[in-house]
Amino acid sequence: MTYSIAVRTLGTGGVVFRKELCSIAAQTIPPERVLIYIAEGYPRPEWTVGKEEYRWVTKGMMAQRILPYDEIESDCILMLDDDVCLAPDSAERMLRALEENGADCVGADVFRNQDMPLRRKLYAAVTNLVFPHWDGKWAFRLHANGSFSYNARPVKDFYWSQTCGGPAALWRKEAFLRLHLEDELWLDRFPFAYNEDTLSSYKLYRNGGRLGVLYRSGIENLDARTASEGFRKSAERVFYRTKASFMVWWRTCFRNGADTAATRFRAAGAFGIKCLWLSLIMAAASLLMRDAVVFSSYFRGLREGWKAVHGPSYRALPPYVK
Image (cartoon, rainbow, N blue to C red; front, side, top):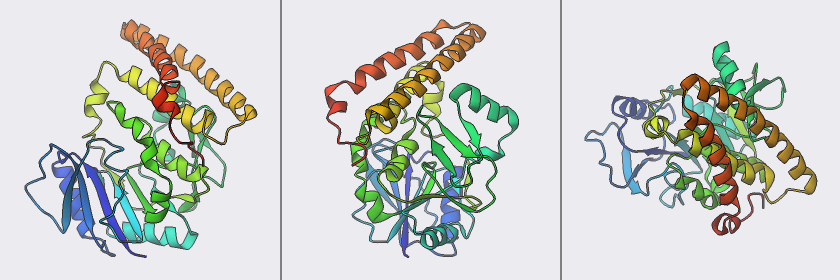
């Protein structure tokens, strides 16, 4: 199958971005085109590494990824962030996994949750109820409370998955367009599109698509944080993260178009327990940091999230599961 590469960027990645473009130019199976979707108002880098072409589009993590891609005629699109580095045969491995398994999308395991140090695993479990699982079928599972779990010990290179990370994923173009992900551009109203990878990839799974994850793809996450650095330093980080998480949970797990009274009851119970637990964590964080704003921002995020999902624009969204 043929493929092209689409990279979303602000163009400010410097050495990290150049390293990525060099790794793209070295692929054993060259892409038909390398398109760089750069945010409007940002200048392109002064240098050119290979055959990359620049297209200026509306700024936003979702807006720079959810595009019609009319200029791409390839069968597949390898969608990348601007801070990953590919092994010379990474695209070849991704293409092989997609074709051999008949997948619609294959995400690369760039975050490697299963390899994190114990303290980071404990931190993820305590602060967001992200746990390992030992289900031999799935790479990642999304649970009724909106948190995911990850395969604790993957022994194969390829697993089916319910979600995948956003930094590197190979999509069949027609499968990507069929999802009408433009319906999810509402997430770009936040300063940072928190959980955008879950919102996009889980939609494929829930609508009957075949989503897989490739371990040992040779793709490395360099984590330049060009898009998220300002958000991470924001005093409103807890508020926006909580509000976005609530709205993504509501759309993916609670009111997704395929919900029933039973699924809503289960999701509400699971999310309620999660909220109670996180309220204790936020209270502890406020005490340790001597800053009551952390605790109040969490509840403000839940309140504003509740208001938002009952607003006219959100209620007018087409069903998540069609």
